[in-house]
Length: 475
Ligand code: ADP
Image (cartoon, rainbow, N blue to C red):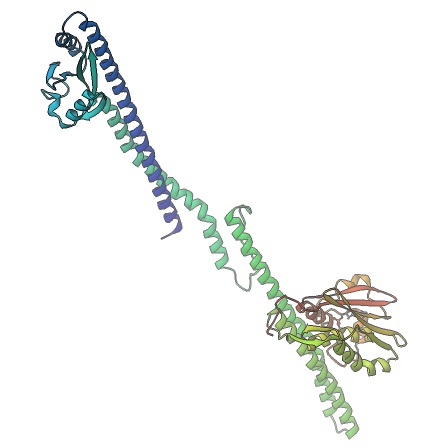
């Protein structure tokens, strides 16, 4: 069942209950008021009768006085019946309203008459005739007066009200149903629009957005949430597309070099030494290719949140020592002073292989961008719940306009490109810092460039010792 129909039906049901309750309430209230006013008239009549009897009883014998008064009152509206203490009917007006010769013949009234002899008056309704039964006494004699009034005339007002409700309520319900249906249709029309737009969004037009009518109402918020979702999808899609495009671009150069090297070498007979040289060159490029492919794979997995991240206890100081050790030869070849300082064993939980990779990326950059005779340092110490690892160099520094971009994928400064004429590993494709930052983040920390100028650069990684954040991958 469509929502608009369901809404209309609910709305109708509630309206029916409310209108029914109001009508019932009004009807009961008016009926009650009517009865009260009739009772008041009847009670006043009974009091007037008692006063008249008291006056008359001074002049004649009690029964005769009652008959006299009853004759006068019998001419008025409604009937009266007067009973003597022995229960016999003493006087009555000509029968008009209550169509009985003796009120005692009506069971309800008989009880009320007996109660009145005991001293308590009451009201009884018999066939749309209201009867007030009241004791009357004087000069030692006790009588009971039954005074009646037809409710017929007054009831007609109630019937009028009831008829009005019978016409007005269904009419109101019909109008409300039509209005409610249109209202529901109108307020739900943005949903149809959202559905329509959303169903047309494909990979090709991920940049399309759902029109937001009123951003602060429920549907506006829904459209906003969907748009934010599309935004994220588009960003991740673009990221993947960009990664693919950049990767293909980066892969082209080494593959071309390998092919050219092979073509040139094979174009004529070579000496064994020449073949070795050519193969060396091909191996270097192939190594570079492997590194690049591994780096891209890692980033792609990281994007898809599928990278394998171990969660084990290890000593950070050991990983630091090993990383520094493995770069000593390269640093020595460039006559760069490579040193490190640690702060005890530094136990932590995480992936030692990834941490090593992060440190190597930072140290390799330091060595690569420092002239010979310079120095590269790694200092690690504990600061509260985290370790702070600082890698500083006395290198060429990063121009301030490039500092914001160095963590971007495939970003390389122009000076780095010329330097990289001869590459030996994955470093050089502009992925090193992007991967290093991801590693820091997946460990619940971060990596930033603290400062960089002509006197060198300082990178700082913050690594929580024990991080709660679920690792971004498969442990
Ligand atoms: P690559 O693997 O090419 O070094 P990175 O992502 O590690 O790529 O670095 C990106 C760029 O950041 C480098 O090309 C270089 O311009 C700059 N950079 C990184 N580290 C340093 C450093 N220690 N000194 C100067 N420039 C640096």
